[in-house]
Length: 318
Picture 1 (cartoon, rainbow, N blue to C red):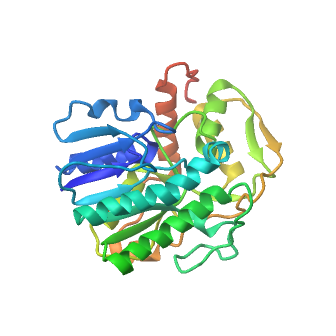
Picture 2 (cartoon, rainbow, N blue to C red; picture 1 turned 30 degrees about the horizontal axis):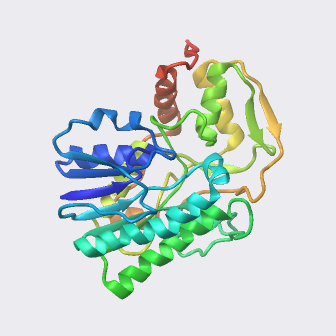
C-alpha cells in the first residue's frame, strides 16, 4: 500500500510511519512541526519508500500519486499544547479532518481518524465503552481538544455515510513511550523528567485520579490492526490496567532511583477523575490486547529520556 500519515513527526505518528514501512508499504508523511519534531523521523529521510511533506493539513493539501490509505494523526494532543493553541487545535480537528477526508475521497483511499478517550470527557460511566456518549464541557478550557475530536468523529461518519468513504475511528487512551517530548505536559513525561532532574514530582489534586497507560508499541499494533480490519465504528485502543496518578509517581521514583518528593497542586478544570478503556470490542474484532506492562514500558521510556541531550542521567537503583 501507499499511505498518507498526517502528524507524521509526532509521537505516535512517527511510530506509525515505522510500522507501515516495516510491513513493506510506502509512506507519505505530512507534518508542519507545530508540535512534532524532525528528530522523530530523521532516521527515515533517505528511505526509498518514505516521502515527507512539510505542510499544514488545515490548509489546502495536494498529494501527488495514488493512495490506499489516509491516517489522520495531526493535532496538538497534550494539555500544554492545546491550551496554548486552542484555535489551531480546533482547526486541525475540523478543517484538517475535512481536508484529509477529501483526499481519501478523491483517491479512493481508506481513512483512519486518530480520535481520543477525551471524547468521553469526565466520564460518568466506568470503564468507558464505545457506546458511552461522554460528559464533556464544550466551553471549558479543555473543550477545544475534546470537541475538536468529537466533531472530527462526526465528520468522519458523515463522509462514510454520505460519500461512501471507507473509514475507521480509533479512540486512543493515554499512551507513552520513546519520542514523547520532555515538556509536553503529559503525566508520564512530566514525572520522568522531574525525577531525572531531582525536581519535585507535581501531582494535581490528591493523586487519586486514575489513568490507564498504554505503551506505544502496543498502541500502534492495535491501530494497525484496526486500519486493516473492516470495522467502521469507533474502537477503544488502550490498556485497561488502571493506576492512580500517585501510584505512577511512586513507580517512576523507584525506577529512576530519584529521591524527589511528591508535591500536590490544585486540580485543573474539567480534569477527568477516572480513565479506563473497555477493550471488549478490540479483543473480539481485532484480537488485540496490550502486552507491555507498565513497569517494563516505563523502564524503556526512562532509558529514552536518559539518552536525550541535556537530560540528567540518574543511575537506576541496584
